[in-house]
Length: 496
Image 1 (spheres, rainbow, N blue to C red):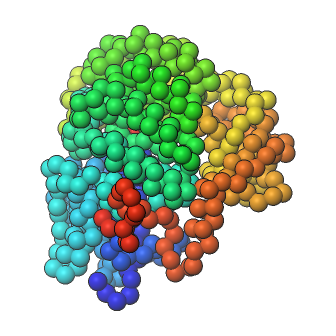
Image 2 (image 1 turned 90 degrees about the vertical axis):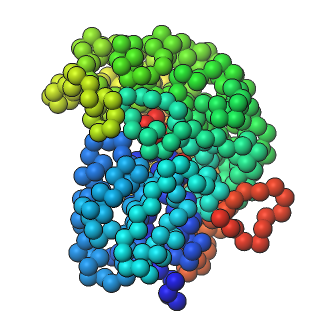
Image 3 (image 1 turned 180 degrees about the vertical axis):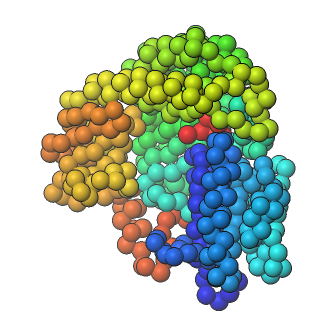
């Protein structure tokens, strides 16, 4: 490596698993001596694209970005560009063929190779393409540069055993591979020791956890074990699959105080006929039955979902079934998508591909219905007192409105009046909800209480770091007992 530390920037597209993988890429680069580029800098020495292959415009988005960088790279000797993630796993050599100024292409299974590939490309002065066909190192054993001092992702599995006809992710991420429960809890405990108070358990099919280790109740046991971690205040998980959503998981959610009253469970379609064509192994009645059980056990739970509009062969009657489920389920929010054809998936070759105008019209009807429901459900929160975990960057208008923002226990976004006393990201503010909009809540009165937290302390330590030290929180491989002197080296289609 050159004597002067080189700067890097990681640009992330796609799901939470990609966000988590990008934290690993950043940690690897910093362990190798790179430093984050200054925000607003003209260009980093190394730009890494962590790509997604789920949406139809993923290719165009990547190559558009690469095209913008081509002249900058030509004018800046020594600059490097790397492409990783799902699109890299899918397209492989085609990326270098279409964008020959790219230096490194690596896949979803060999994230840990990034620093070595960059150095090899620099020395050999030619592109390095390395795509592993199976997982080489579980990502959570790699060093991590976490962007948040108070909240963290914890991957409990990678890959997916499902065969949904619209999804290319299992082909790119591979079969499900579970981490050992002890390793997961060691990471959770290490995070809490660093000041983290909220974790999100992450997996392409998170509640299928245990299928790889032969324990059908492993996920509910893991939730209960997280409840015993002293100092861990909030536990979330994403994304579960209705097929694997069993009663023991609902019981664990209801009986574990730090598991939050929130559930994101993808629906995809309300039509049982379409679900069969999608190869989703549940039907409308099964899905609504789960919703009913969750609401019975956790009455105030906020339930969110994913829905695809315009799947091949979807009729108006099928679409009406989706609208029916939306009305019955009363989702707090729905992430809605127009079906996009992905080469390599069975759905791309199905008959009955719908005209764009039909899909757009149905999409608009669905969004309008869900917005009405979201607003009505949010109005039920007016008058309630909630504890808000103060966030950094959640409220883009906070400075102009003199507000702060954060998440309630059910994950609803809350904007609240800035109190006179200092409040840090990671602290907890108790507020009364006074107004509801479809996608957020307002607490316009005085803050009822502020609890300074270890997470706020961690944020304060991070922001007080000298300017020449990297921002973020570096976490290596968790272990049991005293940590080593130095740290040494994840929705898929349903991960939102």
